[in-house]
Image 1 (tube, one colour):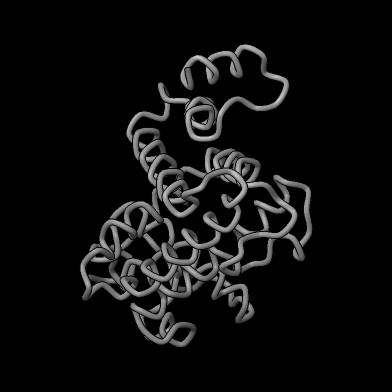
Image 2 (spheres, one colour):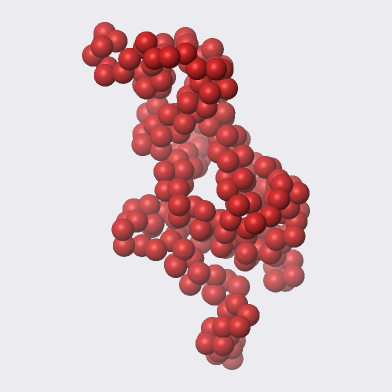
Length: 225
């Protein structure tokens, strides 16, 4: 197909290397959220950036390398936006959590902030949801990434849950399953499904009523009787 037929120009102004790489990552993120990794075409990425495929590959090593660059970039961006939601610094929530979880932040507080952040970025949530499902296949280039991510998140949540349950790892898995499930329902019907509202209702089941919520505490007491 001729360059003009694609609807994208290749005579756009040159960008500095870091800006061009960020542009490639942003465009790739949108395409993966729409089509999945297997439906991603390097030609489409190149067209939307106004580059040739070799021009894209000068900034990323390969299609698989581009995918990992997208995921690593999103992890760093998500950590920054989570710090903003919680009003904490990098010491409390680093770009990459340790197995002990973020310091100085409660588990319920962390989960609520995560869901508030995600409610503001449906395309990013869709990106991770699509990739996480695709990567169940061992041959997927992000299979190891998502396996490590799940293991690390479970360990971090379980560490934060030690004072809340005598089965902290089980609670951690239930929390993650609830968050993922609610996000899928929200992505299917965002106009009728309030992600933050539904999470707060689920949190009462998982954690009990927050302090000061007399009605919620009464409901929790009745469930325990």
